Length: 512
Image (cartoon, rainbow, N blue to C red; front, side, top):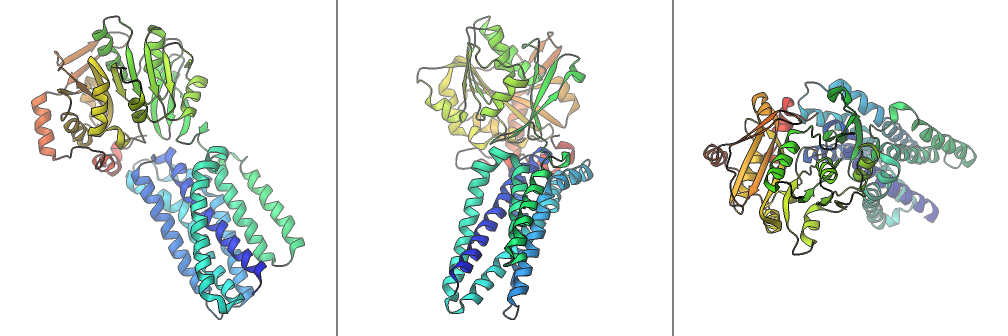
């Protein structure tokens, strides 16, 4: 038994196992700008990576037969790692090409699966070959230690997987981005491929390793390998899109992953392009009759309404819980937000926890839910337990408004949300702008939780846009909810993705 060789086999297995899980975490992030980062995305990614590793392990077992010579096993590992490096390194341009080819009318669930399999199956398959062959080499080197070696190699593979998961999520993506992380993995694979191919020929291996490393960093400079993000944070792929062609004014939209979240006007903060924000602002301002609002915002995005109110009501108290500091920084950099405005109190933390730990006496005229994970609201922000916390924080005449993206024909998640809120709020209303109602398809509802029902069924605005919002008649809404058979959402059971499955199963409902 040669300790040096055993250590080399173990180190290779540890690091390649880590790299395989790095690829899995990066895959979810890389798919997000094209199909979002939902439960369905992660399901496809995990299934594809596990399928690739499983097939790779099976092939590796065939290549690790007892009669296979030592040199042949080394070459098998080198070839597998070479193919792992090439397929991992080429994932970014391949993903862009496949997304362009398969986009359009491809059903979203099928698109998610095809993109995940087309880009990330082969890197997982090829690296899966390595583990059985390495284990064979380690056993051949010390056949009397077969049991301990198998146990050690399994443990090293699992430990490497843990390291890869943690390092991708906590370190690499934040510091060098998803594409840079994938290229670093490709370089790692190629370095080990060269070492196993060269064997003891260190003089030849070293320049080849240097060449592979330089090539990996060089690829990062090619446009096809560039990530489709202006900034890649711990939470989102953030992009700013010029909205001036649509508005005729200096304006911009913030896109998080693949969903446009906010539109800001440079010269007029009060110009609210999104109908749901216009509705919330108009209703709240009419209720307050000129008094500065005390408001709590669940999610900041580009801070569109907080920015508007900070400019109009300098004496307001506008607490914004935006979990991602990078989103706030981008809003300040490119969306004309002034984070130091006197009215703004920005908290970079989870909105539910932040609301819970605010001073006990603090109450709000408005609590606005506008946080999304892809097209869905994070489950812990739609449960009955959360709504009870919200109700405790509302002023006597305050309102809880939550922005909901859903289907117009059968909005099952909206029904479940209303049913849940009705358990605690004296009045729950669903509002929709008339243009969206007539258009149908994907719409944005505003669900209101109130202590007293609104007096009117219609709300109209003439400035800065002529708009009309209609309230869903209560009797019809209650009848639809009863017929839908949706659950009450709780911290123990909040199947948000299942209730919104129509977005994934119907191509015309997919967010673009």
